[in-house]
Image (tube, rainbow, N blue to C red; front, side):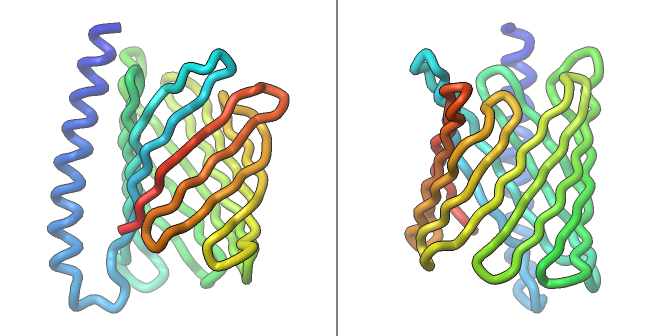
Length: 195
């Protein structure tokens, strides 16, 4: 465990360094029509025992050329972390697909890959993320209905959490969202900041 924590901390430091670089790139991108954007999340997995396991998630994306863009995702928690970079293809305003490759702090095989698809039209959207690496598979799918400009409802399925209702409330660039897996008696509570 101490060795894993050291690797998680190392990846976290790397994530912060990449964030600093990303913000510098955002400053240079002022002349571009479409600018890099992203979010930072502070997430807590609430276990059925009442214990909450924290993590920080960072996502950023930006344009490359035409309908092709870049994507960056990092996650760090007490015992596990990962970093992924990839390409995004957005052939239509309502569709985006991506593929990413990166590393995780899993000694036997640190390589990790991910794919995602996002679709959205009007108040409806759907996101599915699939990951696979040395530590195994992970997936998350969330269907959302934008009920008001600041309130979203939906259903979320996330590996190691379960399936259940999703609720999000937005306050300008800050939002809070949560989900509760009914059958598994586990949940997520998250503070989400867009930049």
